[in-house]
Image 1 (tube, rainbow over the protein chains, first blue to last red):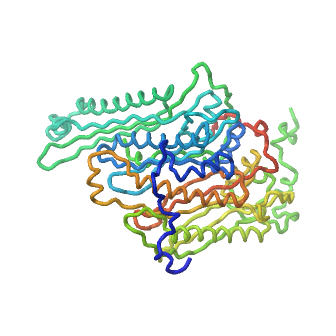
Image 2: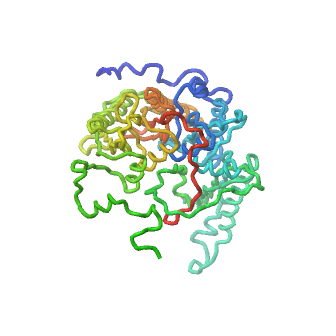
Image 3: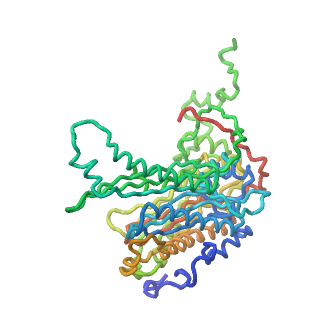
Length: 296
Length: 280
């Protein structure tokens, strides 16, 4: 590369392509060529699996096809809380479309990630996972998006349980004007006493309940139940100049939807052992989206 | 009651060689066989169980001055000068490490850590370090080397390495791809028009797709060159190395693998048992 090459600008190939970015199903048009080649095993497959997970996946008849990623960058001018439901759902839909294009049966080890870039009330909802084919199974019309590490996916599969997707429940609400000052502000009578704040509790509980009800609805759409490991809630008091204090509550629950036959019990027997690992390197560590770190 | 010298479980007995070793602190049998490594005890045991011996730590480093590249405020574009710098510097560090391993006569390097450090003096000078433990096959089996006859490289731990071989695969090369990308800023008018509604910022979404794809495709090309069947342990790092706020490096790294000699039938891969560990 010459000294002044950067002044000439970029070659056109690395610029964003022209024309519509996504096709009708939500697969980026420039990805089709790669997906076709990977479907036909003309390229080395790329996976996020560890060595242990590779062994387990192969012994259970899974064939890795490709790493799939999908993104949706949302600007939440209307609602941060609802933006989450919308963002993740779009990303899941796009990933599923790519999985269909590959002829995959499932995408496993799907991780929810975000880029650390502060950009004007917006953030990205991105998924990365490994598309797999189950030997002897025709391509699925709706591949499962399994947000569990590959080891857990195989564990669930052995027990007749299939993780199929992500369910989200999100709710936010502003308290009525004057509510905060009346029930949790300085005008509160008997400030020296211990007592439950019934009104505030009720306000907050109802937000949680609504989010959970939405989670249930979203789950029912997809499978039998949800393992909702992510619970995120925030309660804000916003002081305003010469106006009543505002109170905002928001709650997000999300988890992995599972589908299974209730009559099948997990068949494995369990032994107690002394573990030789130094750390958890053999297992993929799925991390929650970094936004949720500061929740209550 | 059994004799005190006889231990009922043969696995728990101490081998004679180990007893001798305990008697004389310095072994006359291995005068030059000193090895260095950063393996843990368990890793050491498992690397040996897999039929390999550690021979020495291999290090490669590269101090690199990363050049400047200007980008248009409003466009999504790759910053090739930076992409190339980030890739080239890592490549140099890795090559040097591999060269040291080759001179030791290693068949491969396990546990490679590839790190980037900022030198305190200058913002645009970065140090890239690759460090790992060189190992040789105990019986001199040459079939574990990379496609070019040199040592394989991998970021697999001793445990991962053992497990991979048990699954019928071997590592060939640590593969990587890099793409430094500028994500366009939004104009003020555009921001105003979208106030009060939830919308997707399509430009940003497209930038993510394009940048990730470039990094992953470059990594995949490396795997193809190394004649790999697949890549495991792929991670995509997204990091801004003290660049301006809308510039992000997408870095994909993984270990390219290939079947040992012929692919093991799936039913012959040992299935792990379900256990509950009692110590952690």
